[in-house]
Figure 1 (cartoon, rainbow, N blue to C red):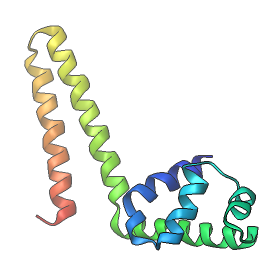
Figure 2 (figure 1 turned 90 degrees about the horizontal axis):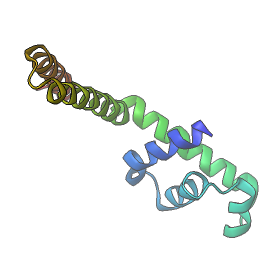
Figure 3 (figure 1 turned 180 degrees about the vertical axis):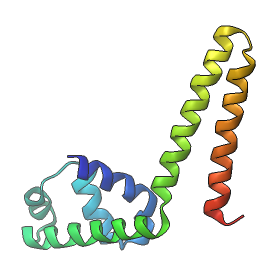
Length: 121
């Protein structure tokens, strides 16, 4: 199940780089949670044909992520921003802790530095 979820995330990021048919079959497999047999019956093709198309598309998505790393970068950014939110919630609860504000600033600066490093800026 985790592979399907990971593939669904990759499909969101790199789906436009696949063919329309690959996107369609992969969306049925990941988003609609249909089995290969169900997709084959619905699309009037063989189960092996669905298997080949789905796994070829998954390999392409994995290759795009290895080369571009957009999903990994997105996850780093959202994790870092989640940490900032928790820090800022602490600040609100303690009514302005200077250390918490400094920690939030460091986290944001680290995210920005990472982003700039990724983009070659």
